[in-house]
Length: 266
Image 1 (cartoon, rainbow, N blue to C red):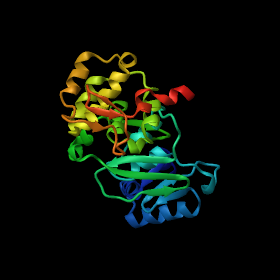
Image 2: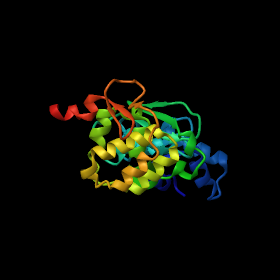
Image 3: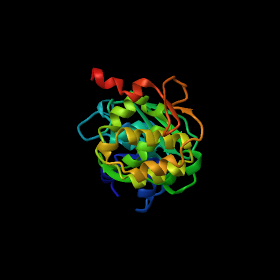
Image 4: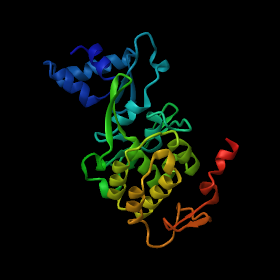
C-alpha cells in the first residue's frame, strides 16, 4: 500500500497500524519505520503523541493542519469510546462547545493535551467494564475520513446522569438533552440497570418524568425505574445542594433544577 493511500484511509493512525499495513505488502518493519520518519520530516504527518499520528492534507503545512478530535479520541486506546459531553457534541446535541473530550476505556492512561484540546480518559464504570462494549450502546461511524467509536444517545443520556461532572452540571445536561427528540426508552432503562446505581436510576426517572410529554414516556417506564430507586432520600448530586424532596424518586432536587430556572433567562 502506498503511503498516500494509507493516509487517505487513516487520517489518524497508530504506529502499529502503519507498520502492519506496510509489512503486509512485503516491506520490513525497519523500512516501514524509516518511511514513517521520512513523512514526518517532510511535514506530511504530525505526531499527536508517541505512537499516534495524523495526516496533513495536501496543500497545508503541518502547523496549519487541524486534526479531528473525535478521530484522536477513538485512537487513544484500543477500546476507546467517545462519551459523555464529547458524545453529545459528536452527535450535534451539546448546548455548549467544549475543547475537552472524555472517552471511555478499561485502560489506565494519562490525559492528553494536543493544541487547544484536552482528552480525558474515563475508566468505564466497574459494573460494565468487563462487558462487551462496556455494556452496550456503542456505535461505529464514518467520520472525517476515518471511523470513530462513540456512545449512542441512549447510553449518553444515562452516562451524563451517572457522572454529571463530566457534562458540566445540570444546566448543561438539561439544555443538551432537550435537543434530543427521541430515545428508545427500553434501551435506556436496560442500560441504566446494568450500572447498578439506584441514584442514577432515580436521576433518570426524575428526568424522564419531567420531560414525559416531549419524550412520550409511558407509565411502565417510570414504574420500572421507581422499583429500583433509592430506599432513602438522596441528594441529586454529591454537592448535597439543598432543595425540594421529590418523593417518587427519593431525591432532594435543587429548586433551580425543578423549575429549570435557566429557561427564564434564555
